[in-house]
Image (cartoon, rainbow, N blue to C red):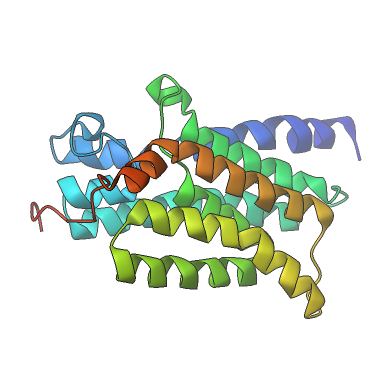
Length: 211
């Protein structure tokens, strides 16, 4: 690998991945609708709050954009030559870190669930499918987005571990990433967990505005 290629691979590409992950689509959508999403609803820049405050289709657009900004940089790693197994994991971490700590918003971002889902989809798609089923079932039963997100994240490493016994290859760095993301998701939702335990967590109730 030449010096210029190494600079692009280990310098420019990781930085670009962070900057892509840091694009605050929820905030930008809110601005397009004349709303500062950080001051409305739950004050989060994620798709759930965009749905509540701005509208269903804007929330779906936000989810798609947040998902893709996690997926595309990690997926692009498959086109790079002579990179170690941990490199894709590094890019995944950087994209999620970008969403949680976006330089464009003074490092105050969202919880990173959608972006993490996109990143993991590029690394272990079947694990994401398993987690998505858990998310949907949990949400339909309780209408708690936070609980659905927590359980889906916790299921990810177990699903990946189980898939290895079903004959699907999974590298150790990816498994470590999934465990890390599960812990991170629980930590980022610690206030939600407290409200769930207290019985004060709000169920999902989309505000019918802008549809």
